Length: 118
Image (cartoon, rainbow, N blue to C red; front, side, top):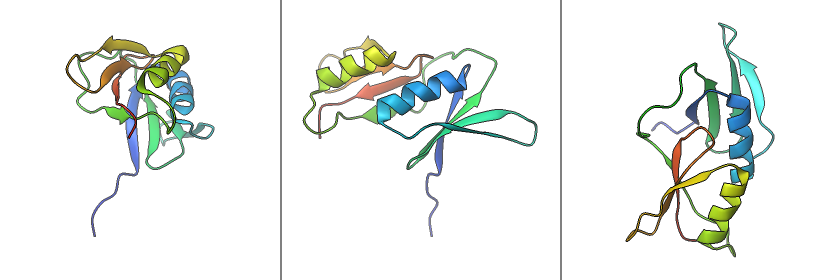
């Protein structure tokens, strides 16, 4: 037996807002909330793996140590997908000249990459 990824946890200043961006970006179901034993409210996006947005008081600082790589859906080009994500609230950080990916940031500055269709 091996472990499996149950969820990817993301620190967020505004967990509800960030979960709405990622729900639209990934076509996930409606976010739902739950509270831990201390009363902290988490926002979760269903799927495999789930995305879990946990509230934190501080702003993001520094580069992500882990990021998501996205590919456009079939029939959509990389540039079209980047434009859609920017319309949702992402911003382009680096065109990564010489590489097949483009680095974007979500509304709270978390980096992710968009690759060509696969």
